[in-house]
Length: 216
Image 1: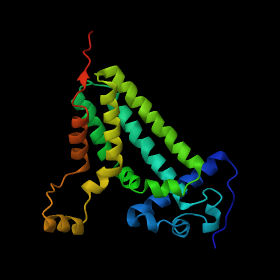
Image 2: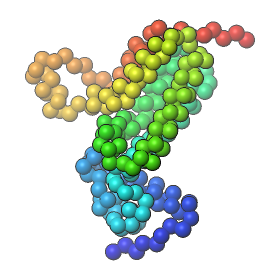
Image 3: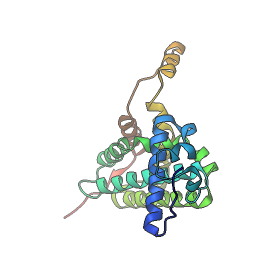
Image 4: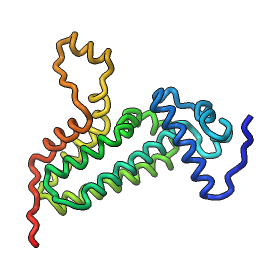
């Protein structure tokens, strides 16, 4: 049995939470939602299964915090990519597409978001939604400052991007069985990667955007 020593500082608490989240990530990426259990997490961490309850009530809360970690990294990448250089529509779409392709695991986790939110305490969901609000405010501010676009066009862009959050990973990661079934049923399907899918769709979503001219 592992000896449990209660964390006594905020830093120690944060470190243990991060250890649990990292173990969850490894398990989820290897086996999916059902593979994540507190028992499995305890086998990859320095403390026992019962002690995990000092930090999380459910496995979904761990996964919610993992998604928050992913999302913060994704948003930081978007902000960094758009912080300099030209602000053409093409570059705007390309930066979002390239950063998204670097964070494919986030979009995998989005496919289980309903299950994760259903099993999480409200505080964990609120923490994630706070970062989501930050993204909406940032991207809307960026569009207002750099593009001539109607309110309807901006809303359409955001709605389309939300659909990519949930649907891009399944669309770009068909199993062999799914691919065989599509071919057998005669359903047209052209394999693509996440970056290409994002760029193609974002260019469609922003087709009415016009870049503002910059004067020295």
